[in-house]
Every structure is written in structure tokens, then in C-alpha cells.
Image 1: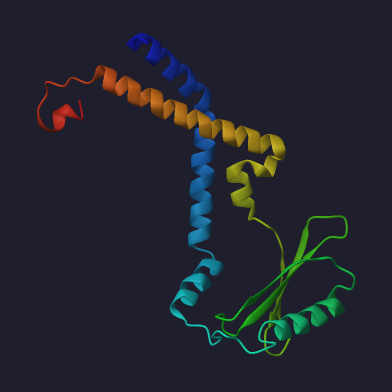
Image 2 (image 1 turned 90 degrees about the vertical axis):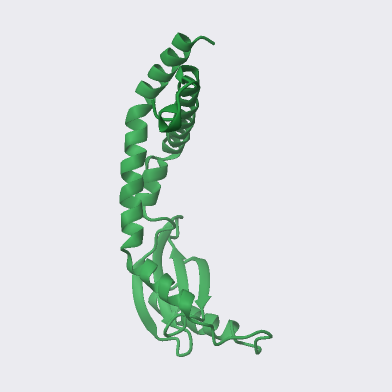
Amino acid sequence: MSQAAWRKWHRWVGFAAAPFLLFAALTGIAAGVAEMTSEDEEAREKARERVSEVKLPAAGGTATDPVAKALAAAATRAPAAPVDKVTVDFKAVPPTTTVFLGKPAGGEDKKLVFHAETGELLREERYEDKPFLTRLHSGEAFGDWGLVFGTAWGAGLVVVTLTGLAIYFAMRKPDRKGLARVFW
């Protein structure tokens, strides 16, 4: 393919992909900043430094007792609610059991966090499988077609990168010395 043809393809694909790439870059920056500054990230960082009190082989009931207490307490707060998942975190201070509840018609609803040893409710939060900024960044916030477009703008970035590299190597002057050989 000639150098002019590469430039033409690069220019048109880049022009079409630019708004999507800008959107992906801005939402990616926002999602990254939100993740870095969230309380969850701070808790994960602190948990990396701690060692769990539970060692293998774990005594019978080590995991099942906290789950049973949490499910019983959750049933009093949300009778007949569907349970999406249950997690036990032995490294949390205090150790926690989290019950994720769904809506009767589908979708996410509540996240109930209980003290793993006592079964006492520590906090109730909104439950979302993925944070809004993550869903916005991937395009998932716009439904299935948003994911299709998200994949398309990712492919656009790959095409713009590859055609840009093809143009770079086609225009490169190999007889230059030093940094001028790479940055011309």
C-alpha cells in the first residue's frame, strides 16, 4: 500500500474514532481517579498488610457460622429477597460477612455488611455489580449497543495505532543519527 493510501486510511479512521477515543479517555481518567480515591481502595490497601486469623485446615463452621448468622439477620431486614451472593472477609477489621441482595424482578438491590462473629448489621449500602463510571467507560451503561460501540472504538484505537506506525516507518529516514533517527 502506498504512503498516501496509508495516510488517507489513518486520517479517516482517526477522524471517525476520535470522539469515541476522547470519550474512552475521559471516562477512563474519571474511573481511575474515583477508584484511587475511594474508601474501598483504602480498605483493600490496608487489608494487604494484614494476615488472616483463619488458617487451614479451618475448624468446622469457620465459614458457615458467619454466613448463617448474616443470612438470618438479612431475612429480618428483607424477607423473601433473592440472595445474589455472600462473601466472608476474614481480614477485615472487624471480620465481615456481606450479603448481596437482588430485586425480585432481577437486578441488584442492597448490600448488607454484617459483623462475622456477632451477626450485627454494620452497614447497608446500594448494591451495583459494577460502579457507574466503570459501566460508562465500557459503554455498558448504554446497554448492549453501548458495549458494541465500546468494542468498536477499542478496535478504532488499534487501527489508528497500527496505521500510525505504518506511516511512521514509511516516512522514517534511516540515515539520521542519534535521537533524530527516532524523533524526526
